[in-house]
Amino acid sequence: MNNHNQGTLVNPTKVTVGEYLRSWLGNKTDITAVTHERYTEIIERRIAPTLGNIELQKLKPKHVQDWLSDLSKSGGRRYGQGLSPRTVRHCYRVLWGALKQAVKLEVLSRNVADAATPPRLKEDEIEILTPDQIRAVRDALRGHRLGPI
Image (cartoon, rainbow, N blue to C red; front, side, top):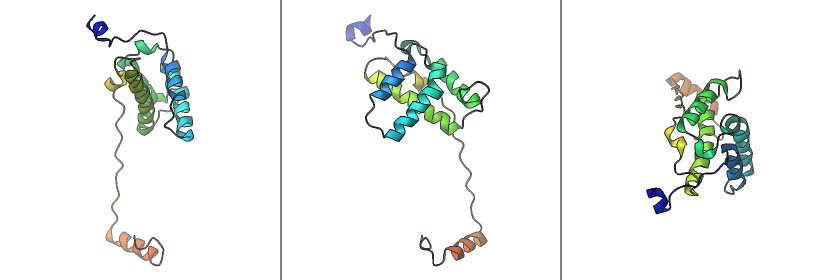
């Protein structure tokens, strides 16, 4: 009741996650054509098959967390190979950004993706060159335009 009096109560809607994401992307003007194409692929191949038919208002953090787990294990495809943590995080950021906009537009009262945890990135180990390897690289670059670097 208090939310209603303050004007912050979000009107329920039957819009699905898939419908909202397509609309959100269709209205997005601050991205390049390549980014738009990549987001379309993520929405259609990674998000919509699992979350697309859920009503936006009924999307729960558990749905998002299960989706992230599914992407990591099977890539969101039956019997498929899991996606890398970096790719799963990219898919998560697309969903998170769309839901963030829904909150700004007062379509949702909160971003349920905030409660989910995407996979951690594995820090790549850095191989330090030995003094002999450094000398070999310097010798190979002597006279090359990258030599001074």
